[in-house]
Length: 309
Image (tube, rainbow, N blue to C red; front, side, top):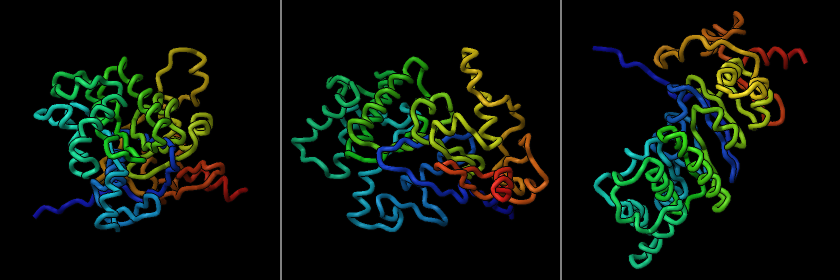
């Protein structure tokens, strides 16, 4: 009989998101960022640990309290084409959350669908269109409208622009920022694009092999990156001018790829790729170190500096 491998897609993660905040969650493919997001919206159940939303344990509530949480937490998926039912017209897609959660009477549902289309800057006539008749950007606007149908306060945005043309990405980001201001929304914005997150997020968290290795305010993060992995990511951002190049950290050569989560290296998971690794990095897994002003980093380099001070 083959032995079943034990994979910890997310391990030892602890953070908070403030009301009306945008937290950018960044990492390479396979880092665990989407898995973490799906735990927060109860698609996945954690094997240990707890998730609290407005003081309630997400996995401890039952009945009406659980239904209320489901309405208050919604998601916008990465690929708008695959997240919309091709057999349903847009109006039916937007009406479905209202039916499931019983938030509107029959005579009010049509009005609400029209309101949702207006929120995402689509004409009311689109309710009679099938998804295949819409462009990628229009499909994503519908997906955003569907997420807003139950009047949530928290949205998980799982790479909401990565499947779109570059010319459309900026319009979707502008729409999301506008909706956040208008409806006091809180976002967890998952992406691998640091150039995008610089202009969107209030704070940034970097994930690697299922752990957050650095978290800071967006301004602090881009001005003073601490973790060698963060420095590697930032130094690889493409720029168009010498001025932008000077804002980047010293060039760090990107070596290797993220390891298979089935066979995570001992000690610090990043040490095989790290240009600043020490002997202890291959033996001891570092803990998160608070560096002040909400800036924290998981790296032995800064544990040494703390003990010296």
